Each structure stands twice: as C-alpha cells, then as structure tokens.
Image 1 (cartoon, rainbow, N blue to C red):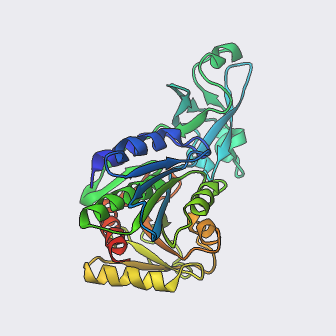
Image 2 (cartoon, rainbow, N blue to C red):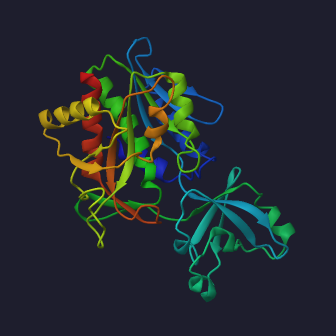
Length: 336
C-alpha cells in the first residue's frame, strides 16, 4: 500500500458538500491504475476496473468529513459558522482552524471564552472565528460565506503501528477501496470493480445513492469506520467488543446480506486475516443503507475499520487493520 497517498488525502480538507480537494487527489493518484474514472454532477468519483465485465461490484467509502462552513461575517471581522455533520462542539473553542477560501488557505482560531465552556448546550452557532481581521471589509478580502472550515490538525505516528489524524472517518475507507482495487488488479481480478469515493455521507448520503443508482451493482462492499470499545468505559452490550489492531470488523445487521458476510469470513479464514464482529439492530448508519435500497435492491456487506475517538480532532487507527482490510477486500473481489 502507498502510505504517501494516504497522507495526501488526509492533508486535504473536504467538509461535506465541499469535497473537491480530496476528490482531485484521488483522481490524480488513480489515473495510473483505473481503466476509467467517472465523475458526476455532485462530485462523486468512481474508479473502474474491467468495465466490460457484466458482473459489477461496487466499493464505497465517503470522501467528506465533518466540519463547518462560514455563514456570516460580522462588522468587527469575526466569522460565524454553521456545522456540517456531527461535530462535537466542545472540541472546537480555542483550536486553530483553517479555511478553504478558493485557491488559498486562511488560518484562524475559534474564540475561547470561559462562558462557552459553561454552556452545556454549546453549538456551532455560538462560535466566533478570529482570522485577524478588524472589520467586515477586511475579512471579506480573505474569505466568503460558504467557505469550508476545519480544525488545523496534523498526522502523527504513534507506537505499535498506530497513527492519529483528523478525518480518518472516512479517508481511511477511501484509501482502502482504492488500494483494494489496485491489489485486486495485480491478483488478476476479472470482475467489474467500481470504487466510489462518495460525497455527502455526513449530511445527506446523496453520493452513495447516486453512485449505486448509476452503477447498478450486483453487490456492494462498503468501507467505513466503527467505534472501538477498548477505551474509557464504553458499553459493549449493543455493538459488541471491537479492539484497535484486532482486524477488520464485519457487521451482524438485518441490512447486511448474510451470504456476503459468509464469503468475507471464508476469505479471512483462508488468508489468515483476523476479523471482528459487531452488531447493529437495524440500519448501519453508513452509505451502505442508501446503496442497499437503490434500484431494485443491492446486496451489501460492510467492512469497518476500528477507530478510537471518532469525530474528534485526534482520531486513532492502526495500520495493521488498514492493511488487513485491503487484503480482505482484494481477495473477496478476486473470488466473487
């Protein structure tokens, strides 16, 4: 796997509805591996292998991340924002941020006032962003309403193959499906593979539906992150035990097709890949739900990446889990 590609997409900002920076990185990287690269009107990118094959398998992971969007500029030069996706508001005050303002990046800070931390119902509408401007006119020379705002974080290596960054949810999934397509191609896969880097999962899930409706796949493999249960005192009754470094996670859910889960388990056993099982009582709350209900219905299997501290500025994953997800999916594609 190409870890430089992973760092490239993790370094970009792609707030839901504004995913272009990551999608451009995906297209630039995959042009040497995909036989076709398709785009649609809302920004989805689909990399295709063996497009002439009648059997179509869709791989899906979402390019968008949680964040905020500039909604207003005040007379004193401060910016107001609205959230996009399920941010945790208390992780924002006092943090450095960057704003994607067209071709340039503008840096700033979310104001930190003690009363903000006393507000038990803190929301994005309570934030004020300081970019150094003293007037509305000054601020508008640098930013515009609609610009994306993300926390200005870093990619850092940790012990035992772990690493931390913002928006591993779900850049890791995008990385995995693209690397799985590459590896399946190297293994001689004959099936039609459609690796979709989708938009809008954190807000509307429109990208997954659009892609599935147009691909019309025979089956779909959805890759997203899932909560680890190996920190704090997280309740394990509902979802089960998931540990970092324990391998890909398959989902026992009414919406996940049993036969595809069994195929994944067989591939994992033969390839000596450790797997974990989580439970869901109904929907998976991933793009898989939209894909499953598209067209005449699509059989779907969910492969999840164990993740600590989801939707925070410092999500943590394990590189061994990433490699095992890639190998498992590539083997599944070759056997389908």
